[in-house]
Image (cartoon, rainbow, N blue to C red):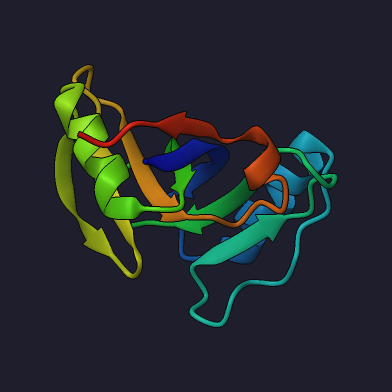
Length: 126
């Protein structure tokens, strides 16, 4: 048995200036932007406690939006999603990039939300 939930939205920006992209999305969504992370690829937006997270990511591919699913067992969640028709595209750091049968990309990530225990779905692993 493992648990998972919708975790957040990542705004992929094909840009060399992640700070400017973070400022735009901060103003557009009304959430303060944090400083760029140490690798210079991410800016987190400061959403209210308990809400879905939002972050801006510098990417080399075309700009788009993708979502994250957080889980207490990445391997089990990836297997569950593959059984539903998703494809594993690769691993980055500690997460797995996947593609839905309809073509949307998404990531399966470790738990980050403090409300995970209260809001996660429970899945039987078979």
